[in-house]
Image 1 (tube, rainbow, N blue to C red):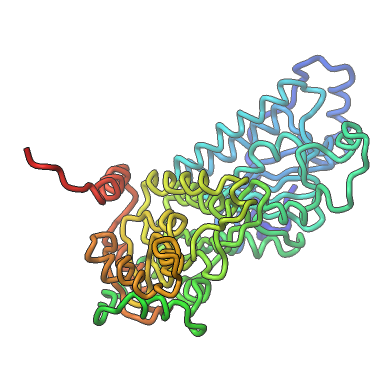
Image 2: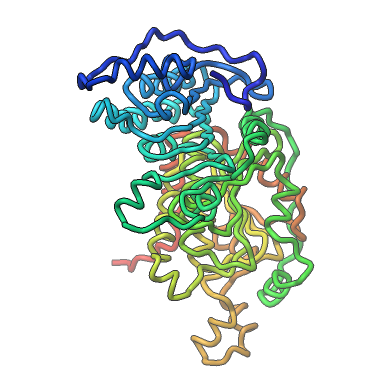
Length: 477
């Protein structure tokens, strides 16, 4: 058994000596196993082993659908678990290639309990900070999708794959209705934000290789110190600069500053989400990139996706680079109903819970609480022609004086400029304008170098930093 994503001739199966038993004494099961072995040429539905992909050493677990429909029994589950544990012990990335109809009926609950068993084994990869890539083949349904198949750091769905927790026939039997043509497809999984990409089978190797490449060990480069800022600007000037049509977007800045970008897609909860998130390398360091978009107000799904990416960053010990230019959270009725306030709160909590270093850079507008959730960092930098505010100047003028024409006055009083934030002790550094990919690259690389590796103490330091802002003054006795 092999897979086209593996380099030719490199797969070596692990001889584990495991054989399928008959735990329920199911009539005819042993004979069915014998026929499956003869027909498929495999001894079980899963084989574990080591191989290379584009020259990178990996541990793999491969499904064979021709063996009893790729169903998972005790041996298949054990082989996947051992493959993950070998990957964790060796430091080699783990790649799972699925093609399964789900649990093996003839093993009953022994089959079903493979689900928590595999999730428990997956934790070994997290403890060792070893990357896990899942390739969902045709089909991927049942317990594998509802356990280890949905817990990868990066998930590829093969173009023709049927993907869903319950197989199409059972869904139709349960609901009494035929499924739509778009249900249970790789494309529908992508649309729902459940996978990172959909690729033809012949392209899967290329995509896996890209992920392995971006997550290769660090080789930090010294780019020197970032350039200091120029003279102070007024609030009106900052607001005008941010709105100028030639100002680069966060996406343009990130794509110029960060190498080997591999976008991460979806919030795994039914939403594609528009914010840009990706694996990348900045000055030789692996990193997780989060970037908001000035033309798009973050919705609940964007915040969930950001949290998902922070979880990946924590598992893989990746520093986080957050690039901010947003007017603030989407205030629509739909966002309120979907829990926008709750998602902002959860993103604050996620940022404050990271052991990995976080550098946030405001390149344009920092709009209220949603922007601040992306900025709750160890180092908060802001370009001298950017601004950060509790509310937009026009909205503040309307609320305070019922006169939006007094926006310039509000901008001055709000103390929203880069130098104002530095004076308040909120910003750690002011960067020279205008924002450019090279200046962003230099600034982030410099501060990541200062912050150093992940540390449990970082959580306490970050909490202390944000806990001490705005304490007021106590009356003297």
